[in-house]
Length: 46
Image 1 (cartoon, rainbow, N blue to C red):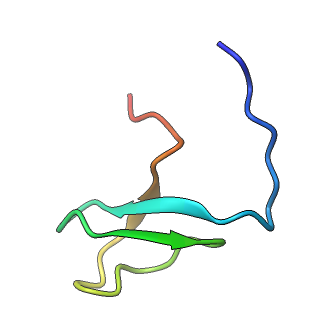
Image 2 (cartoon, rainbow, N blue to C red):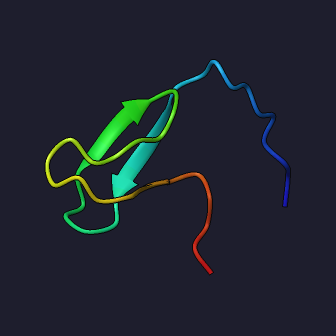
């Protein structure tokens, strides 16, 4: 597996844990639709 170079200024894709809304952002925040936590889609869930 190859490590991805991290650039904090680059936007990432985030997905809401609760409703599945997908947004592009440089920093995670609350879901704009339901207010739940969001996860970076580049990070695998184990």
